[in-house]
Length: 74
Image 1 (cartoon, one colour):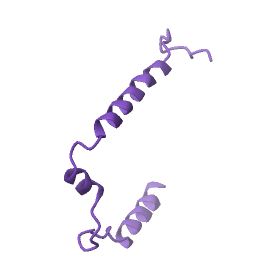
Image 2 (cartoon, one colour):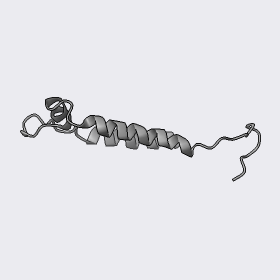
Image 3 (tube, one colour):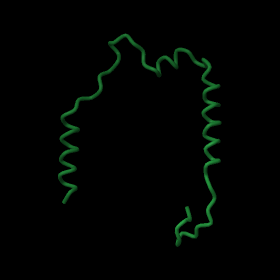
Image 4 (cartoon, one colour):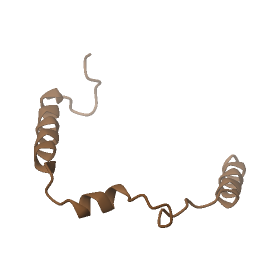
């Protein structure tokens, strides 16, 4: 029965909030508009650096001989 009060609170919060205002009239461009206006402006180096960091995270993965029925030793 905890689902009903939680659902009621979530619905009330969703109905009471307003949507985010559009940025059309402010005169300031969005980040996506800036990227489309200046294509290829040194983004490749940051993409490669991020990919290298993600590849580096694979080194943190340790192998396990856990059969699923016992706990791994710490």
